[in-house]
Amino acid sequence: KAGVTQTPRYLIKTRGQQVTLSCSPISGHRSVSWYQQTPGQGLQFLFEYFSETQRNKGNFPGRFSGRQFSNSRSEMNVSTLELGDSALYLCASSPDTGSYEQYFGPGTRLTVT
Amino acid sequence: SQQGEEDPQALSIQEGENATMNCSYKTSINNLQWYRQNSGRGLVHLILIRSNEREKHSGRLRVTLDTSKKSSSLLITASRAADTASYFCATDKGNNRLAFGKGNQVVVIP
Image (cartoon, rainbow over all chains, first blue to last red; front, side, top):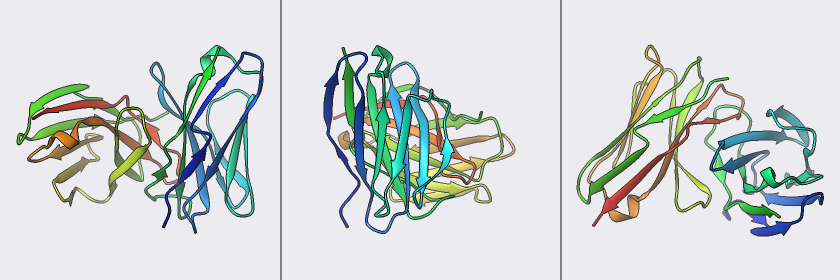
């Protein structure tokens, strides 16, 4: 099976702009989670989607949002970008929700200038 | 909120030696997982140990879990240069919301 794919791999945006990141999970996986990784805060959970519904949400401002489509593909959107949003954004999929290992994609490296 | 915390945070060893990393957490968990990350890339799942398990093996990896002490350890035996990476523990309450530790950087010198 193909692994988790994320597009784009690298992105440079300017403060105030918005950005959309995409994630395609492993075929058959219905749960998709997003994480932000920065040198200062480490890996932080953003949100999880399962069957097109947001099941969990981390402690991030409303500028961070996401959605999941009927084919389990997911997108996350960040509006009004700030310099502090520069990070590696990782998407992970798992077969179901709860007590499963997660399979991570290669990440999208976002740089905000 | 619970969060894994690894100790030590940086480890440099010779090829062939064993590497041990510890992780502590604060609240009850459903399972604890270990991941590896190479040079800022995606995380690779290594092993998952459930709260009712005490020890688990996978190849050269051995993970222990002590729920009474809220701690876990990851042992890599006979290390190789390819094991050079950052290692993270992550706790899961059973809702797919992983809480990661800060990571352990391991350098294996050939």
